[in-house]
Structure formats: structure tokens, C-alpha cells
Figure 1 (cartoon, helix red, strand yellow):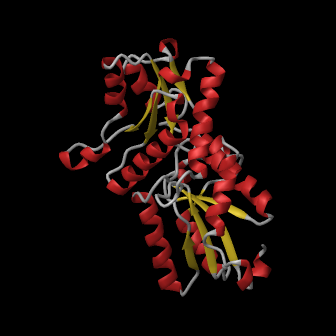
Figure 2 (tube, helix red, strand yellow):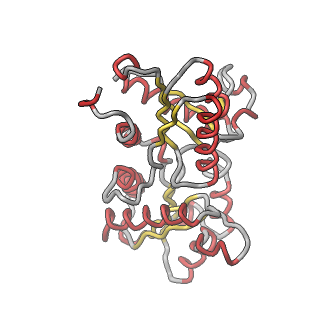
Length: 287
């Protein structure tokens, strides 16, 4: 489906949180490029914040674009409609900020209209493609290790959030992953890389640090870290925050610790993004 077929000037954009890690930005661009080739339409990659702080020389000479700039360009080019696919696990601060920015721009300039797809975790989906991706990632590292999978505890780790609805998405994803893996693993535990201080943020528990300590206390000898992260960065990248938490808790590859690939590296993510796009585009009978 191209812009002419839609009968309006429209755009497709992947919106992420943003990163100061060049590799994360380049991986997001690669994902947008792959989706563009599949759809035979232009797909932009933008960030709500941070990414414009990375020098262009570290990004192949092309500076990262922020969502605000993309919206301004859309207005100046007369774009009427934007189909935005959020690269977020759930409705956290950055996504809410991005939606407010889109609405404010639309009201101020009379357009474009921004149509948002659901985040990657949708609590109305049972047995979703995201669950398939996570299960594949876990089973792939277990197969590669030739370990007995039933003794492994899987820890599905996300960033942690001050918004209870984001943690609810994480916990839902963990329960779906548990259903998909069944008795192939010891159990699946959803946990947060970090959390804010204060009792009001206890919904983030368990933290990854506490989940790892509890595993030791309960006699678990094998752990799989399953990343609920899309791209490399200071959190999920090699030597990043999650690696440091594992080492501090006494877990390392030498102690039967396995780590999955990131979500963004699984080819099925393109299928999920296409589903998200189709959910907000006009249906064929109305085109």
C-alpha cells in the first residue's frame, strides 16, 4: 500500500525512547530499513529524546532524528497522517510524552493526525508473536548450550518503570512466556533491572538483583536472562548494567548463566510490526 493508494500524504515511523549508544540507534535504523523493504514504503526511525546527542560521525554521517523534528517536517511537507509504531514494551513516560507531542502539534498546526499502534506488549493478545520471539530466544540459547533445560529459571528482565501499567505489561509477557515454555524450564520470573526508591514503586519487584539472590537461596543452579529490550545500549549491551548486576550477584557464564538475544534481532519482530501497522491503517475495503 503506497501513499497514493491511501489518497492522502502519509508517513510511517518507528518511535523509540532514544539512546546515547550509537549501536542502538543504528540497530533501530536497520529495523526501519528492513520494514521499509518489506512494505515497499518509506519507514522513518525517530527517538523521543537523547539520540540527537550522538555525533553524526558515529552514525554513518547521518544524525539521529527526534520525534519533535519529524513532526515539524511533517507539517512543513503537508503530511496529513502519520502511522506511528511505538518500540516500547508498554505505555511508559517516553511514549506518553511522544503522544502528547503529536497531539499538540496536530492542534497547533491543524495536522498531521498521528495514529498510534499498540506497544509491543498488548494485554489483549494471547499467544502473541512477541511471546513466540521470547520463547525462541530462550530455546535457542538452551539448545546452543546443550544444557538440560528443565533446571533453568528464566528471568524476563525489563528496565523497570514508575508506571504500574508498564510493569503489568512485563508481568503479562512473563506469564505468556511461562505458558509457551511450559515444563521445558523450571519457571519464568518477570523482574526489573532497576526501580525507584519508595514503597509506591514496589510493584516493580522483584528486581533482577533480588531475583538472582533468591535463585541461589532456592538452590537454582542455572539461569537464563531473557531480555525484554530491543537494542544494544548501556543497559542490555555487553558489559552494560544488566551484566554488572549479574556479576555483582555472583552470576556469570562460568556459573551456568545464559543470556538471550535482544528482541530487535529476531526476524519475527518485522511480522509483529507489520501487524501493529495494519491495525491502524485503513482496511482494504475502504481504500
